[in-house]
Length: 558
Image (tube, rainbow, N blue to C red; front, side, top):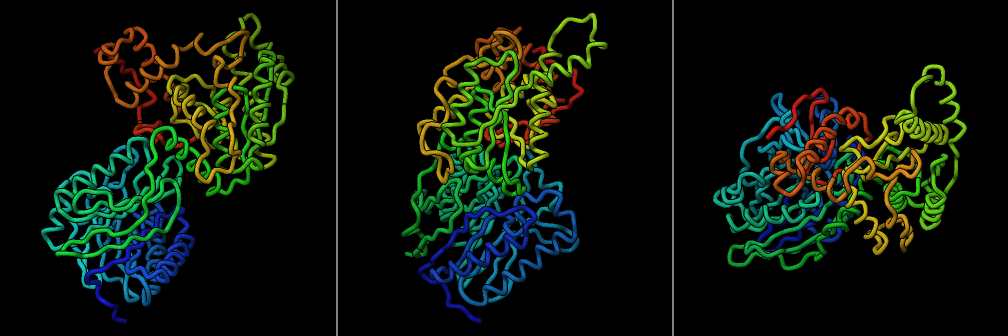
């Protein structure tokens, strides 16, 4: 059917939703429901995010012909829905002439009316799209009900600041950008700067629609927004929440401008990081259909923060905390763990490990005869705890939460098959001092849509006391490691910034200390390869972002 041309008024709906990778039918149903709602609200056009039909990133799934076929069948069903109501722009992988593309497809009148193909395929950090997609041509404007729209896809606007200007020269009146832009703590502000630069070059308004939700290590924070042709913020949607939002646009003197739309606040710093941890953790558990989680609650700050994140993500009834005391576990730690569980409202049990540890020691006694007790016996404690938590997981189907922070993961201050046991780590990309910052933030704030108590959830004594693994008498972390403020600064330089040893020394750190930390970082790579995935918070996490060889004799002598 012929639909009314858009002349001076446009109602645009942006679907900032949480698709599931591979759940093509589920994602299609989300899209159909949103189309019904947007059409009833009088929207002319409904904009979805990058690769919404398949979920993003689909990675090697797009190499399976049957996967692409299923996506295209879903696209055809969605197109039929546009026989009435709003038109649709949706992201989907498609195959054309033997090549697979990352596409934004325009649907209207019950059919596909245009296809735009992503041309700048990111191949850095968490991205490796060149591995699975072919690059399309630079985009040209597409016509929708009489207006011309530019449709670059995500990375298309990041590296070439003339993309929007070329679209304007080709006749585009407005630019709509579907995105799958993962969160890191610098990203929300950076996106705005990227879009504003394109706007000022082109004198066209740009709408930036971003996915929300967790996918393995990645978290998509939503925060969709638009910038008017004069560089002012047109609208801002929520961060870390699914929503269908509407904006009204008017054309005056040949230029489109936004006259109404959502005006939410951009999240920053600890608030954003904590929300990312909660969303990423909750989606990993729920999308993989775990009914509950279990974790060792030691009375230390790392496990307390993980328990808080788990409770906020899942609700207290789905979190099971276990205290696993041994001879070196202090009464203070036992009290702190119990109080933390009580504040969270989650189930709490105690499983002493003295007898199983002694059983292992007795079994090994003939082999260890004549040797001195050392880190081996300390690791037996940790591995006993890991075995018990995995047994509980096997028996009741609860996923084990592992609780090591980024500082520990960097220098190998963790035990394989012990405290590193687990399915997912919500603080894997959080340095120790950031653990303190997030714990303090949570005690004074309540996260959006959080399912935990609207009160402080981490005992102050856990925050105040010196950290200890409690694997030997009077042990403190600083017996083996530099003070955490020092360690974290050196690690940020080595890991996040890839600085040389000399550059770090110029910051005021002793060379022997920096070289020691660099050595620990390199020799711990084999542990990290075997660690659970965890939420990506920084611009360089362990996993997708940093791929160092395990066998590696390089040491920085500069």
